[in-house]
Image (cartoon, rainbow, N blue to C red; front, side, top):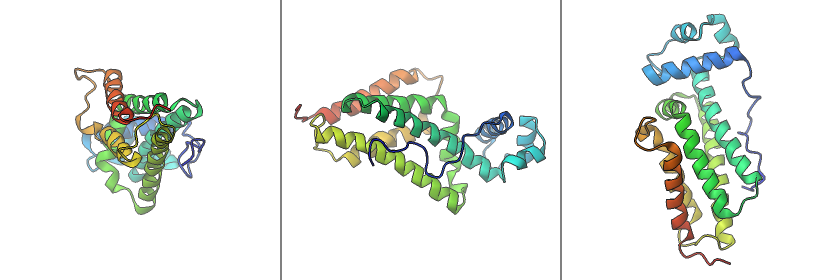
Length: 210
């Protein structure tokens, strides 16, 4: 994965721009988070969004389609944020720090989307699941590319493979829906800085400094 790669999900269409679409998605997200996918009906979404069933089915084929769009908003945001970091051409240390802190803060700010997706993603059909996995792999490879560059340039030690570093760093973020609380004792920005410092301390151990 090169650092100039297009950050948008492969095959992604235009961003949802309609106020009605956004209202439907926001209502579905809220109900999926509160009740779960199975206990949320299309009628319940329609009532919460204050639209007609016809309006919902004009934009979305099914509840599954709504679930996928919730994921799409999440990964599109994450890929765009990482793409912005790559475009800035930062040195490896600053780039990894910016990418990781941005991902943690963004996940915290949109924790309901992350919770719904982590809990309900298995309900997606084969084609949507393949798209999910491709997008997640794309982000993984872009982040790993940052670590690999730092190792090539001597900013990071190479005692731990870049793939392992990426699995550990992103794995922690992927687990946030199970433990992060917005009303917890530590603000997301502070947590993000601490995690980034921990990851960077490990990466810089044994660096050549050339």
